[in-house]
Length: 512
Image (cartoon, rainbow, N blue to C red; front, side, top):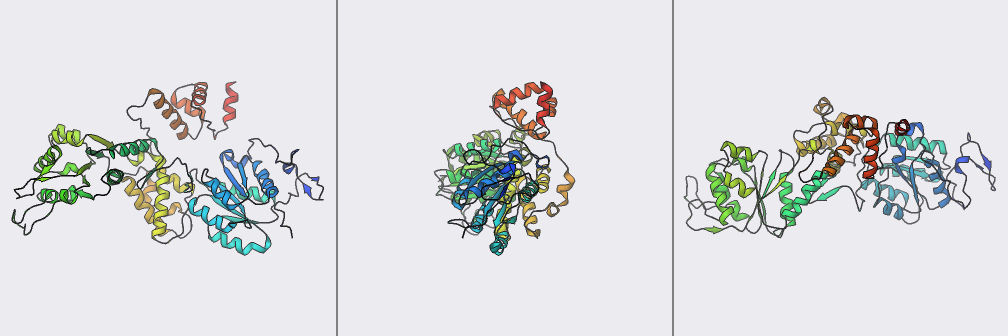
């Protein structure tokens, strides 16, 4: 018995007769060779920026898939079709789709299994099941595995378009996709980012790992300085040795020398037995000295000696020991300023600052916030055995507008609390603490690293300003103090086909 036809023509549309007696609306007519009609970029008034939205249709009946695609292309969506779940997963490995429309009965993996895999890898993707009357129970089971909706056959074009439009209106701009083989997301030893400034940080980490040179990691509290130190260690030739982290700010000043270098029995009051220091424990590996600025002058002198001679002695000891250790130090203070004030040794500063890796605060790399938030959501959902949560656009907007004085550590804490409190599959805005709502929009910052050319800096300023102004080229040109024609010329030079959300074609018309 043949399967149900997938698409039912809209009874309200003008129609023509087909050889099989069914009616066909103009939007579904075939071309001369049986291909879907060519479609333009026209958008329905309610679809907003639908031309940038990607939809994947999965059906082993090619005609049915093509008919669904033709309906959706009328609204300007970018629609692709495949015939199996395996092909769909392959497409998700090279592209992220905002909507997946799949038939339940597929060869090989079923639509239910495809739903589960796509939802786990790309939770922001809206999944719509196409089902016959006999498989409604299966469709309901698929809803529990991450599908957003299901539509019974035969599909009514108007209903399909309305459902897809409603789903897209609830989606954020950024959708994480763990299936991507090539992604704008960069990952390195447990760290993830999208921003260019963090790409530079990752490059420096890889460079630092190629030698035993001392590294100084700087940045505000909560920016991930220890993660950087661990990444350097794990990527280096010392990865097989120990990684010893010492938070010097948490150790009393009169005990820090003993903690770092060890002591002999009876060397001071309370030294009832011999103790190995952190440098001995890190033998053959890496020692991470966090908050190096809290060291007293005597400890600074001892550390300087190790960096210069690779030798040290335990407190109360008589035998010099060799230090086969790589040193990575970190601070959240301006050591150069402390040197100028006389509170930190200048010679030690120069020994530490052979290779510096400066971590930017989270407020200066806001494009990383949704990436990090989704990572934390997945982590804590698994830890607390909760369903994987999606992040509505309003939640993402609030997270991106908050200045994050506690940086990544604060974001992690906020997401953990929200996941614990969540009662649905969405991280609703009301789950966020009140301080997020009180902060309001914050000032955007453009960070221009040293070493960039003027052309690179100009491009970054223009594109970031255009992004900040929601793609409105007229306002962007006014902010930059250039003409709209100059802005168009620059964008054409950068080969960035950016689309305005504010009737960009009207701006172009006014220039002619």
